[in-house]
Image 1 (spheres, rainbow, N blue to C red):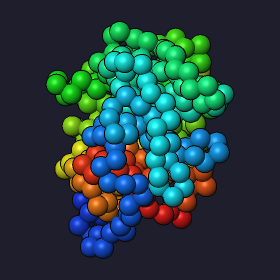
Image 2 (cartoon, rainbow, N blue to C red):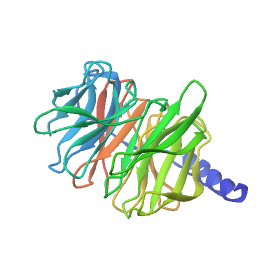
Image 3 (tube, rainbow, N blue to C red):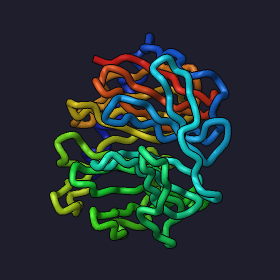
Length: 284
């Protein structure tokens, strides 16, 4: 582990030092339109962007191509959404961290139901989903700087995959479905697991580690490059499939919470906590 860690740290350090002119994101939605709980940007099959917690916590907003946002659905009292993914049936799955649930939103009727519940969760935070609808949920305990990783199968059975990790946060499945990535915000580590067709994991390896600032949500592009929101630094960093830094995009806000790609993978939308809005930037 130690021989793998040192080259990764050196590469990231040299990369950060060498970059004097970063690409900059631009504003997309109105500033302070969303609460400090702004999270969970996601795109449906039609290319529509959804973002969580407009004006206050506990709802889902729909964002038009011109950046105007409108309330889409209110969640039940006591529910606060964070991570979001779409099921293959078109419904939206939400990590409800105050209710210890994964919620399901019917996009046609707007009906909200409990898709999975686990009282033993600290607070389901971010979600990733495979093509066969296996869901992985990060589960941080911010007070103790620890976290868990859960799997919810297509049968909606909840299974604890790993306990007593660092502060688990961003989670993502590689586009070839071969790997699962999980980051730990406080420890600034990104782990990679081999992902098997039955949803099991093996061969956990350190993929990358940073010297400073935190990490939040992350997404892969079509080539398997991993984009990570650097919370506190105000950037999104892009890592290659072998963990090497490719570039870093400067945001106006300092606290990016999550990100998603447009339907054509040419635009990245980033939720910004300190500005209560969405910024965007272009990609190849």
